[in-house]
Length: 117
Length: 408
Image 1: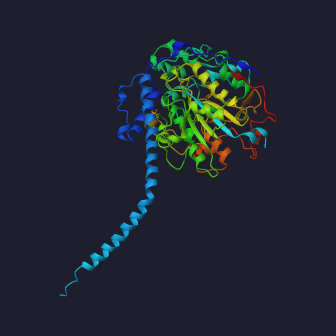
Image 2: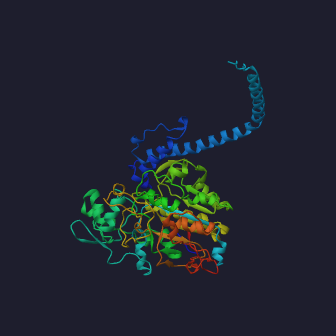
Image 3: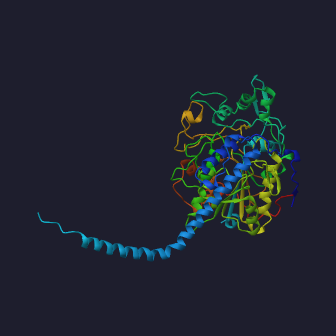
């Protein structure tokens, strides 16, 4: 088996101050669109027009990506909670239904008979 | 069934950024004339009218700055050299002119013709010569990243030729949703590098189905544990950024990011699969680039069946409408598996990114509809053995190879 050595990039290559490319700009705009749909407490409050460098773009990308995941996890938790609470509420609903039937009967009884003209 | 296909359980696609075939692999023609790369005829006129040859002077970084224009009007100029007549033919003679438009600097504009020698790209060129390299894999659209990547996810860009928000129109589902909602169910995942790099598939998938995504570390762990999904799509790191482990170099190879960081990344994906013996013999890895990034290639993109959408003259920016009836510029594409004969060159068939969902769908789900017209007519790169085109099966070896290279 041949083993190929993979050269390591120069240490000077790392440049988070590089101006954002068209690709990163598009990614930021798509994330901003997604961010508008997030709950208020999960939004980044970063003004995207001020993002000029890759490092700044990366920070925004991370915050919104994490927030999207968090929003879905939160929604999942709420869904589970609602499901757990669902059983007792059936009994209450049934009782409520019974009362409403009784009320309807009462109301029906109370309704004054039409006077004959 | 051929043993390679019989064993095949996982397909992994790694999509890199913005490099043309000739730029990355064109020099291999000197080693293997079957590879359709750079020749003495690989030239373009510069703005003075001088014919400039393609030269092996490409550097890892710092050369293609500013980022060469690869939006629809610029790519139209690169392919058609400014000809807008009705019967125009693609000549691939407008690359230097297009790059000149950005800085109006004649010597700088000629750098768009530079290509790498194989010794500078040991990972990509080794994979190309050891496994199957495609002579005719084109970007889906003569345009930028987002619409081209959409073809890999949906088999269409839903009429878009740009980077703007792209919302899926039913009924064409993503390849991931097709797989996870199938009966029997299949598994699929998109692995982005990390939360700080994220994905380019935000509008439809990340914001609505974040559970489809994992990080590259999870990909490595899944390979290690043998938990890889049936289908995986891997995205590189799109930015230089700091992380808990230190400085992370962009590995997407998008100009002006470091090419060697991308080489390391490709090697790490390959190694992760290869080091798990069970996974290695049951996985096919496709390494492909989303589009050419404005960089020279000599093969004219062919016409293709229209996609049923029309981009207006305003959307294309050329004053002409586009019916999605011509492919984009050729890009590097390599299929890797120990069941592929060493030195396979795939020639004569035309592939594009719609070939990705077309292949995955055919392989895991069989006949499926609805699909976009482009996807329905796309060539597939892994032929189910029972199909009439089984002769095109690339995983054709009767015995698995044990001589595949390793990267260190």
